[in-house]
Image (cartoon, rainbow, N blue to C red; front, side):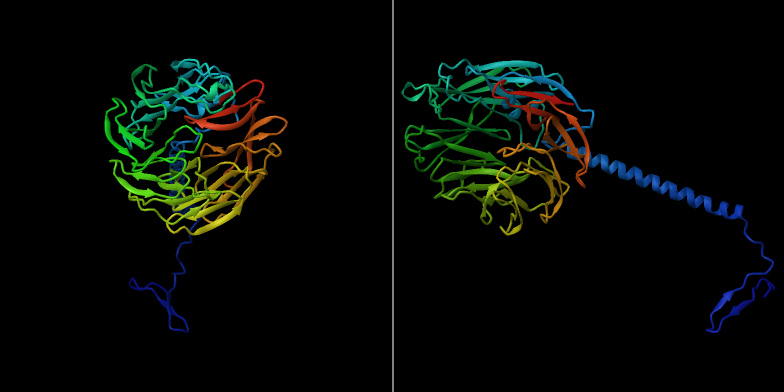
Length: 497
């Protein structure tokens, strides 16, 4: 078994297979030699691991950035969170809840205890009022009656995030009470007007008269104004938000059904290029963005357009039942509706688009439905005081009377549930909020605390003290805001950071 003329002896086994036989005088590999051969491989493995980790980290950051860019999601929040500022001005909660972020400011409407209606901008870093504009003065009938804040909205071209949107407000004023009774909670307005406000400065740039029965809804770059005409018909006009110029007008084919003893009122909703006009009872009409009738909805006790999921449009109707019917409209912007789904729609306050094709309803059961077929996918028990839904990465997070639970959004399986101290017998439970990395809930033990939970297994990550009068949480402009309602001290808000 030696090398002869460059050839090597070959040994053959019993099966006839051959194998090369190494020469007996071949040098044996030393430890140093093996190391020299393997170190390039080791370096390569380390390099591959480093690249993989960097890729995963980049992917995680990209995913988190996408989540935090969605409406209702907070910026990154950690255990060092504290109260940055507090506003004790009356109407602060309503102002914050309706606020839109414009040019780095929170802009919202409010009403004071004497009935003064305002639009204000707040610096989110300090809580200071950047500007405040009075849209209607004090109301003599304000004592003992409910004066609503102006209905305001931002008009901007569909599908854009323009830095110069148009702010419109419907201001209803000149209230009087039927028969002069100051105890009535249904005051009748005497005047109404549409006010155009520069959201950067608070300057009123235009205003125009409207009927006292008017309703204002903004969809994209169109302002829809509906009213009840003198003959009882409903009239909806699509207008240019800046000039008020009418683009088209639709009058209902028949008078609206008005409840006896109630002032004339029209119901109006507009979403994704569709408009629905009707009343609290009777027929309603679904219109296209050009004003043509797409369908008439009859024999209902009220109807509205709703968005049960991000990017999903549905027609919600009542017909004498305790819970409404929901019909998802065609995804191609058509007016055809899918099968009927019975239940109170639960629209997630945060929706990342996972578990597509499902819509959720509440009641005694939290139920997931196939939006296309109306088939029930799953159902789990739910108390009447169960809180909001947050949908992230295929998981539904929800506060309950026990605490916080996470469900698989596709199957309804309980992933985890954690006990959090809540008010006993409360009809309202604190809202779930998230920054994409953690899920937060208000704990109302002996002290109020913001508790962070790991979204995957529900483990407590940390807890931070909150103002003692905190009753709920919300997210405005990427910042978690603590809401404080007090019978003795009035309302207040605290920005956390």
